[in-house]
Length: 85
Image 1 (cartoon, rainbow, N blue to C red):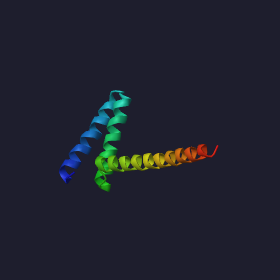
Image 2: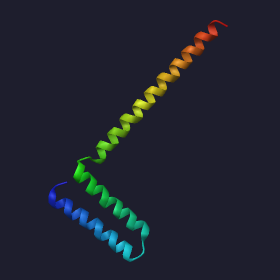
Image 3: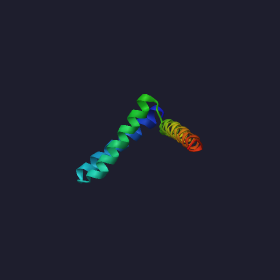
Image 4: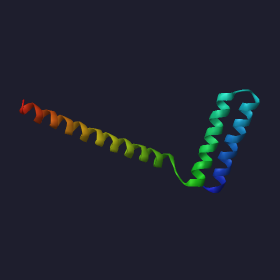
């Protein structure tokens, strides 16, 4: 986010959180505070939602590939073992 947009969005989320807190809407307060924290985090680190999504997809693909390889080795072992019985 560019400088001015960042401050406007962060300020809007903080104001909305404070207004929700004033009206005892705790869930909305939590949601707006979390969104403000997310905006702050992404601005400071440069990490975007797409970066996190890509990292998650990569981790899931690697995990699935390892599990698939493990299952294939187990099935191959069971197949070879059955030939000798």
